[in-house]
Structure formats: structure tokens, C-alpha cells
Amino acid sequence: MSEAARVTKLSTFIGHITDIKADENRTLFFRGHADLEYVALPTIFRVNPNDEQSLRYVEKEQELFHDIIMRCPEEFLSCNSAFDHLVKMQHYGLPTRLLDITSNPLVALYFACCTLAGKGAKGKDGEVLIYSIPNDEIKFYNSDTVSVVSNLSKMSSEFNFENVNHHKSYLHAIREEKPYFADEIKHEHLNSVLCVKPKLDNRRIVKQSGAFLLFGMGVRKNDPTGIPENYRSESIKKIEIPKSAKLNILNELKNVAISEATLFPEIDYVARSLRA
Image (cartoon, rainbow, N blue to C red; front, side):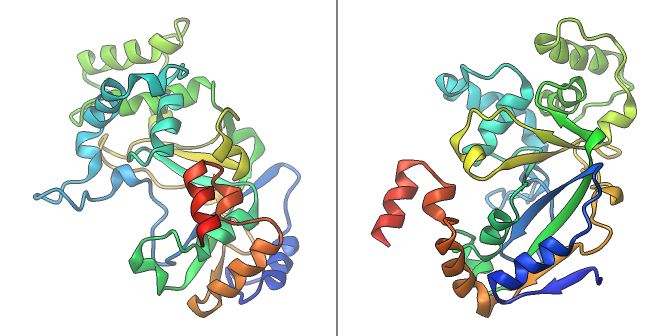
């Protein structure tokens, strides 16, 4: 099978998904882009369009992390870890190291056709990316490795793992949520991309069968690392959706209960769908 397929209707999409040879030791995850030219990269590593110097959000990651907690502390009372905080921040649209994925291919297809996408994406072909992730590399929200990578968000843009003072500050942040954590941070964990299953305490995550790719750092803290090649499906790696087919596919998805109202259970989204 080729690395990419192209579909114009739901039944063809489902056929391609069912044809994927899923290894019993791997789990399939999906991500939909309304614009197939969009790079699968967390928002924190993108350029802030409102910044006069065209700086990326990651240059102020530490400030973003702490400022939103300072301004909206009641929203984070139930958060017990840096990862919990990142999930909540992602939910409200703050740039983070998280990239949304889903275990439901129809949810990814919805986002590939989605009218909620930015205006520039509405007239573009979309795509569904397919990931086949080894089960033994999938982490839960309370994993030590997840704590190690998540706490990079609390570090300054000058963070240097080899700097003694930086290392102490980093270890202190991890031990705030993992008091027993030994001083055994592995450098390869910092440079990894982790597939993480979150707590199912968020209705939107439940409705969207959500999970996350948590990005570590590259050579520097402000540089992203890449998604491992062994996370990609060995058969078909993506399915493209022509812009001319998006509306029809959205209507087909609505017939199988995949729509804005079902995937976004918050009352403002439900009200908007009723108004449409």
C-alpha cells in the first residue's frame, strides 16, 4: 500500500482504516489537519503572530506557564502535576508542548474537514495522519518520564541540562510532584516525544477519545525534537481529503454522531451547533 491515500467519502476512508495492518503490540492513533501543509508540531514551537520580533511562543514558555496559573488559579486546583497543568492549558488554547491525537479515526477525519479551522485552511485540502505506536512506549499521565518532559515547561529559555544550577532547579520542579524521584534524569528522555494517555476527567478528551504527543527538547530547550519514525504506520501514513469533499464528509460524519456538538460538549459549542 502507498504511503498516502486520497478519499472523497466516509465509506472509502473507513475502508482504508480497516485495511491497515495493526500489529497486536502497537496501538493506532490519528491526527487531522484541515490544511495538509500544516506541520505536526505543538503550538509552543510556532511563531507568535502578535510578536513584533516574530518570536516563537517557546521563548516565553516559562512565563506563559506561570502567568496563566497566577491569573486563573481556581482553574488549576485539581491539577497535581506539570502534565495536568499542560492538559488544562491546552484545553483553553494556551500554547503548550502537547500535540492532540485521538484513538478514533473518525474524530481525526472531522478535524481534517473541520469548519472550525482557521480561515486560511478552509480552502485547502486536509489530511489524517496515522501513527502506530508501540504499546510499551505509551505512557500514562502519572509516569515518571512524563514528569521529566512536562517540567521542561517550567524552565527558562536558557535552560541547560549540564548547568549545575539549572539541573538543581529542574530536579526540584520534578520532585514537587514526585517527592521520591531519584537524581537519575536520562538525557534521552529530554529529547523524546512521548505518547501519553491523560486522565479522563475532561469531557472533551472523553468525547474525542483524546491522547497527546508530549514533545521534549532538541539541542536547546527552545528547539523541538522530532516524532520518532517508528511511530508512523508501516503501510499507509496519511489519508488526504480534497477541499471539495469536506462538506459532504462532514454531513456523513454527522449521521454517525461525529459533529461539533458531540465532540465539544461545552454549552457554547452546543448552542452554536443548534443555531446553525
